[in-house]
Structure formats: structure tokens, C-alpha cells
Length: 211
Image 1 (cartoon, helix red, strand yellow):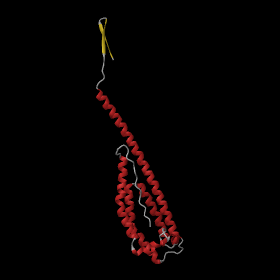
Image 2 (cartoon, helix red, strand yellow):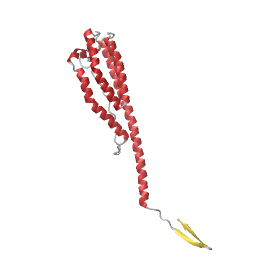
Image 3 (cartoon, helix red, strand yellow):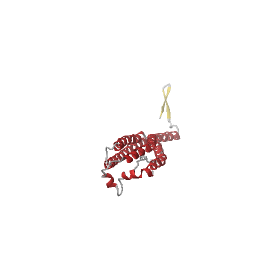
């Protein structure tokens, strides 16, 4: 059973500047890092529950039993169906926790997992109603996981690109402000400009010319 957590956006530090974009990237990273241990513990508690060992074994598509799991033509027994319902119920607090954490990080992450939960719920309902074989269930589960992984990668790229654009824009604006301040400082240090004036009589008046 593979549990996907959202990726961590990274914005490179440029010229020692700390921008709002970097602060946001660090905030998102902290949310993910703080949530990960509790999420892992929650999902792993269900995954490692000995009551569900036989059911999870039928769902293993990695390793030596993978081909058998994907080609299994049997349907869940009444006992297995009851266990599927129980697994589903036990995972609800973990799923809620995941949505809350991803929502705090960025709404785009939460949207991916909300969609994943919807299609997974439909799949598990069909399985519990005896409409699918174990092989069909496992194949569709793999498809959902792959689609979720791809969407998470796309979201990570989009968020990171947006933060990088903001970051470089902030750096450019800071450089413009810095150059303007340096120019103003240089002008003040130079002091007032020197003015040379010359006067010459012109009839009953005096004409003065300054440069």
C-alpha cells in the first residue's frame, strides 16, 4: 500500500535575499514536514493491523505476489467485504487529516487528494458490492495511484514555477530600489553643484552670467 504525500516546493535563494515567495515556500514545506509523522502513523496503524493482514495481502501489487494480485479472478467473500468496510472506516480520520494539512499548505494539493478520495470511494463501493474481482480492483487502484502521483507532480511544478516568478520579480524590484538609493546617496555625498558667475557693466546696469 503506497501513500502519497504532497511534494515540497523549493525556491532558490538568490543574492542573499529573503523574499515573500521564499517565506511562502518555507511555510508550505514546514506544514508538510510537521504533518508527515502523524499522517504516516495514522495510515500505518491501519495498514499494520493484524486483523486486515489477509485482505491487504490480496491488495499487494508489488513484489512476488504482484502478478497474482492483478490477475486474481475471485471476488471478496462476506468476511473480506466486512473487513473492507472496516478498513475504509478506520482510514477516515487519516484522510481528513491529510485534507486539512494539504489545505493549510496550498488548496491545489487538497484538490488532488479530494479527487483521489472521490474515485477511490467509488471503487471501494463497487468492490464491497461484489461488482469487481480482486484483480480488477487492484488494477484500478494502481491506475488511481499513478494518476494521483502525476497530478501531484504537475501541481508541484505549477506552485514552484509561480513562487519562482514571484521571487525573481521581488529580487528585481529590490535591486531597482537599491540602485535608486545608491544614486541618491552618491548625489548627496557630492554636495551642491559649483556655480561660477561673472558680471560685466552694460550702460547703467550690470549683467551677470552664471554657469
